[in-house]
Image 1 (cartoon, rainbow, N blue to C red):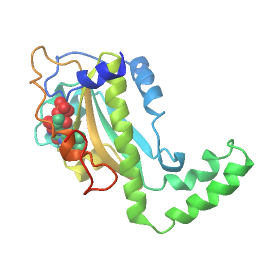
Image 2: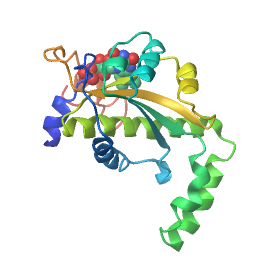
Image 3: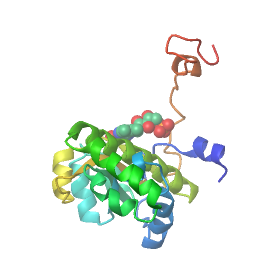
Image 4: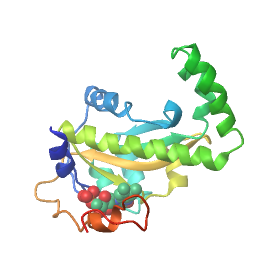
Length: 207
Ligand SMILES: Cc1cc2nc3c(=O)[nH]c(=O)nc-3n(C[C@H](O)[C@H](O)[C@H](O)COP(=O)(O)O)c2cc1C
């Protein structure tokens, strides 16, 4: 799908056709594009837990304040971020040439050492970018999706066996939208309110 068309077509879908399954092959095609997302120092903090099992989706729905899409979707993907992704700097830069390795590996270790807030921010940033890629990659292959933060992060982390170094970023449900279930696109703030030229107090775009 052409990109502008894709952006228009992606919507947050909350009602899905029952009985639709998503295969490993389809997930592989989608995630092969998702992992091309950018990340700080290319640390690729993202991790994904794909839930397709009906009973587990039902439990997940209960931990998501009953939101039905979590149970009705083909897959509920918990997008996560690794807080200690920087520990892999040597491996990530192993094949990148000596100059890049000598420059970036010490820098990465220095920047993140004993910086838990920065570690978390980076994990969330990278995870959020990957989540956006996931929704576009899915839509491009004919799947609808919905980002969600309405869930009990602590209980979902336990259910999906997240270790302490992996933090949930958001859920992305994927499936096929129920016909006529998607309302018209909701209000968008105008460019003039959100795009500022040069400084926040500068002229606004489109004003
Ligand atoms: C971080 C994040 C969390 C969200 N959480 C939920 C949620 O828990 N439940 C839900 O139905 N929609 C959720 N949404 C979807 C938004 O309501 C939706 O993106 C917004 O209304 C705009 O609609 P659109 O994506 O169709 O353009 C979330 C979106 C984002 C980005």
